[in-house]
Image (cartoon, rainbow, N blue to C red; front, side, top):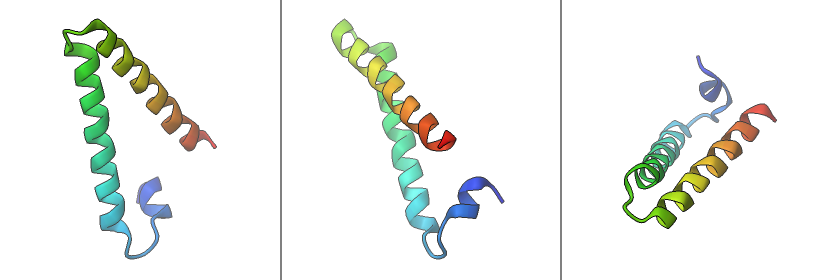
Length: 63
């Protein structure tokens, strides 16, 4: 059993899975915009948001 499985309340597995999928899709969208946007300002904003979101996730894991 992984960490997420160990801390998931009974009956909340589907909800947690949904949140994980949403988060992965949002990050993929940001990464796509950061990498492929023709608008350099938009690419920089998306890149900065990727850094912020990954830092938030890292902070949650390490706290």
